Image (cartoon, rainbow, N blue to C red; front, side, top):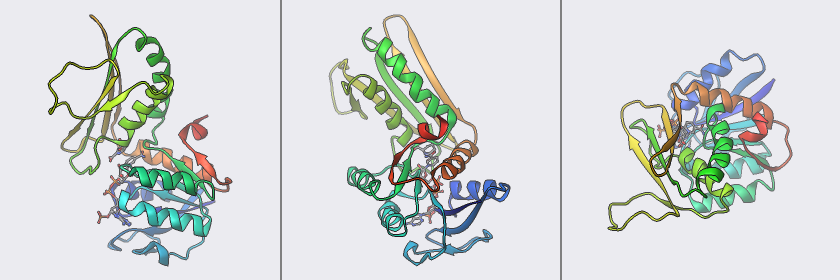
Length: 251
Ligand SMILES: NC(=O)C1=CN([C@@H]2O[C@H](COP(=O)(O)OP(=O)(O)OC[C@H]3O[C@@H](n4cnc5c(N)ncnc54)[C@H](OP(=O)(O)O)[C@@H]3O)[C@@H](O)[C@H]2O)C=CC1
Ligand SMILES: O=C(O)C1=N[C@H](C(=O)O)C[C@H](O)C1
């Protein structure tokens, strides 16, 4: 039985995971952390992470970027591995994640779905075919109107996947409104759309002369992320310090 602390337990993802784990004989949420203790989750909820004294094997995090520093300090101090799913981290926070991964196991992934993690692999091959042939690369992501960060962590991860395969030749462009010049070949445009209850859509476009190739992933419910997060938690429990990602879980 894997004992989980759910960080951000009263949020949208925290609640989907609470429901999923309730039906899982091999996992249990033993405590939650959130700003407010205003729901009956069937486990204790702490409004201050420092006060959480419940023994656990792993922390699953879907909260907010502002909460990540205290979360990392806690996981290092208590030596509890963390599945870090919150997006929109600053460069300083990303450096802190790396530093803490020398002391505790951290699995960081902007997207826990099988589809996106498979797409990341496929894009490396696609980029190595289309980039040398001069195709322009653009990413468009769409999410619900409650999302605070833009572009999505997934859009950046997809771009990073392409850029890694291409030896870092691309510069990401998020806004063309202030420039009056033609697109450079080494630009990788990333655009964000926000509206309604869109769960998550990501489109990667390779645009050449007289042909366009598009890769598209659509999440129809938050369960795809929740399932991946619980799988990742089971994988990470008991692992030594280090940086892990969903590729380690999926294989
Ligand atoms: N990696 C992945 O696959 C996915 C990642 N995400 C990311 O996960 C994060 C959460 O998403 P979602 O569940 O939709 O967001 P929500 O805003 O619905 O949930 C976040 C929860 O965390 C709480 N919270 C905010 N600040 C703190 C804090 N300092 N300490 C503890 N709890 C806090 C919020 O409280 P309050 O509402 O009062 O602010 C809320 O209850 C986002 O960064 C999102 O981008 C989302 C889906 C998939
Ligand atoms: O906030 C969300 O909802 C999501 N956030 C993640 C991201 O920023 O990439 C993953 C998913 O698309 C849903």
